[in-house]
Length: 346
Ligand code: GZL
Image (cartoon, rainbow, N blue to C red; front, side, top):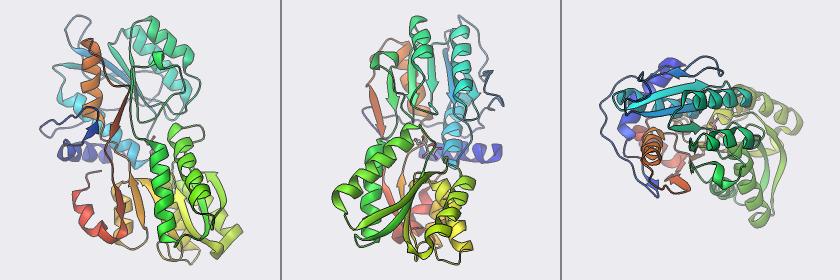
């Protein structure tokens, strides 16, 4: 897992030009290694050293965990940037192992440390008001990264992340195109309560209901954004519905990669007998598209390190920042995957 993160971190340098709506951030940063995530969610490790009055930007980041290749790429991008700027950034990182209580403990420890800015990828949307209020009372702004929290707007400074409803809508249009607007499908949902799962589902299901009356969603169940659970749920769908299933929509590529294994083990051809549409754009799904086993991935940019620290510095300097900073993203299809894969860095 760590090797994958280091590789992704170094490769993410190649993608420094990633663009964002609202504020761009490009940096030429020499290749290097990333920091090391703390192994338990309750403590924050000090990646960059430094003390109270050294003038450095002091940042604490409470990461969700290591549930998917996308998450590893995001962690690598953030740690890589911090690791390359130890002279100006004092970085503390906590891996919450997908537990909200560990993220809350990490945020409290960052407050006690007196950091300048707190970053958080909230594992679920709800349950944050109390600890966010503690941060506000301590005068420490919170940057939400990649997932939203359901809190009053004055409790966070900005959200740096995708429009998941748009991603879900685009996925529905791609599925309809693959099925010629009719067929029975199944849906693999992300982590229960996560904003990316809630909104990718809303965007997809609403578009299907509004525009594609001849597409029927037979079943929809969480695979928790992991490859193993995605395979397990797809196996149960196949046992129940078998070859009735003509398409599968997964809220992330990792669950789709598990579903592809299940489809093959059931003697069916993924990408042909059962069309696939998923979100993220990790390299492994491009490899599956090149092999003809997947059809579409809706890109969701995880390389948020540079824009995260640029925004943190602006907050420390008292500058105003946009309430929502959206990465620019594309849709990638099997037909061009052999070319596209050459440019993929995560
Ligand atoms: C999306 C992010 C999701 C990814 C998954 O911003 O929240 O979490 O799509 C990851 O791969 O687990």
